[in-house]
Length: 433
Image (cartoon, rainbow, N blue to C red; front, side, top):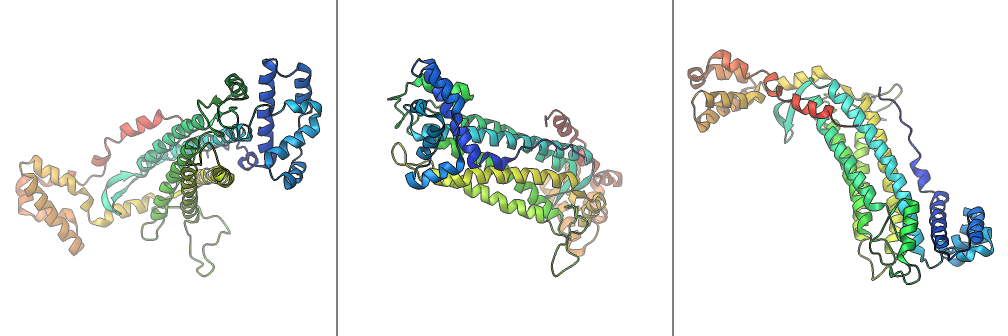
């Protein structure tokens, strides 16, 4: 069993308490930057750092009157600080605090998602090596193609999950950006070095240019990354849904004691988690579309983006956190049926070995066109008559004249299709979870 990991609470990041704590962190960093330039007396800075606080309920009460959340917050902080509060928010605009604080929240959320992804990769990697040699049929267009192994299928998912980790790391850099540039981004009343100092203290990158806000292409890229990660989970979930179909039944979600599958049909064992993942991936994709539309705002700023972001950013990070955690648990406990995989491999009368026969005939001297015709003729007959493909080939005069029975027999060995897959698992060994 994969060890449990310490998983912080994602929802807490998006509470009003934590959001305002991020705001206060930005404001204090700005005061420290001004004090370093000699614009705030040392005594006033000490008083601000000692007394600065807020009460969420008080802020909400003030906001009912001001109808402005930032002013309500600053008013309440001022109530705690007293006279020295005149230096708080000096030269700043609301979005200097809001967007820089949001960057802190998003960075925290991203760190949790990275933890989730690394855990999922560890689960997938463990199970990939467990089923490295579990032979099954590969499918293209939903139709039997050629043999693969279940471990190889999982290895493909491992590498995609690793790419998701890299995508999210890049998105973290894109979103971990702050600004203290004033009402329209001109540094009119706050010099650029204040922004640089604040961002250094908060371990953020200063935006190279901003308007009244940090530009929303960054947030669109971030949400698009979350949507790609959700699509990875959906991709795996669609596969498990198919493999659990009654007529396939090569793998199955765990069905726990006391669980019920249907109010009407007691026999049902449904892929409910996989189906849930598919539905939830659609939600995150939809949120990514909203983020794209948020990029186009009027002039230096409007607030059409912020109302949407209060929904899509918490919802998407919380939902993806849930999806990754839930999917890792499912994959860790996924029930695999190797015997059924073998049965299904053999269910298409040996037709899945047609390419080996084709190449063997070409090696024997037939043209590709002639070899293809010979193999396809027997293949279509095997489908129509529901009989063994190999047996039909043994009766074909062209085949008998071209290759020996032993050579034909060698074409029907699944191992011959998988002898080069070891290189993939060698690469997988090097993949960091």
